[in-house]
Amino acid sequence: MSDATQPTGAAATPRAIEGISSVILGMTFFVVQDGMMKSLLEDYTVWQLIVTRGVMAVMVMVPMILWFGAPHRLITPLWRLHLLRAALLATGFAAFYGAFPFMGLAEVSTLFFSAPLIIAVLAAVWLGESIGPHRTGALIVGFVGVLIAMNPTGEAFSWVALMPLTCALFYAIAQILARRIGDRETTLTTALYTLVFSGLLIIPVGWLTNQLVPIPLEHTHLQYTWVLPTGWELGRLALLGGVGLVGYFLLTRAYMVTSASLVAPFDYVYLPIASLMAYVLWGEVPGAATLTGMALIILSGLYLGYRELRSSRATLSPHPVAQSSVAPGNPVAPMTVTLDVEED
Image (cartoon, rainbow, N blue to C red; front, top):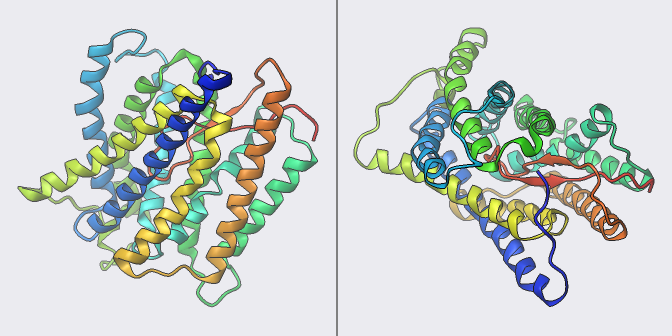
């Protein structure tokens, strides 16, 4: 979807501050959400937690759409596209969360943040968006960072590392499909359909996974079992969904008040915040490979954002962008990873 109207001069400063603050606060909420998810996986399965998020979306977003009215809508002719995207996102985030008990939060999140790089490549291949040598170099650096973070030749390497990468790939494809939706749908309607369809589709995905893959009994978070929560547990699950929705609305606000090219690089604050929380709560210390890969991925993403900001200042008309949401656990927030048509 298109960026908000861009203010100039003195009026731009407060809106820029509000946008950047909203992104940072929103990412903090997503870190909290993923930390809660990691803790809840001790008692519940991945499938049940994703269903919970869908239920919360219905309870919160349906009344909002009814209250705000048009252009938001509960019934949309684009439901097939929403359904396809939700299938990719449900499967992808099941893999993302499924990796939590096997890997540290920083490791899982770092590998997921290859999503912006994958989106950039898919936008060039499928959408014909041009990239010049500067961006090509940045992408190469970013993917080198992904390889370093995976450390496939190290003794500690596990095939579980492919789970967050699978999520990043499915996530990237889903966001490229979002280009088909474009401005024909509001963010609120897209969020409702994505989260609700994800919550419904994860039920057969979980059953099929358990039928096709021999999951050891000790990996209870991947078993196809359902626990009936009561009392305080219901509160914990409701809080999980509520925290994610607050993060989503904060990111939405950020992209309503200022330029996507300005605030997009700040989504990377997720990684240091997640690393700090994981250390404080679980004593997780990222290894040298993870930290090195994280640094390269962040530098690559920031440079891509810088090139876009520079290009957007040099042109009066917007060029095509690859819409994406680069926030772990949040498949619907309007984040933008851009590739401009300048051959640089």
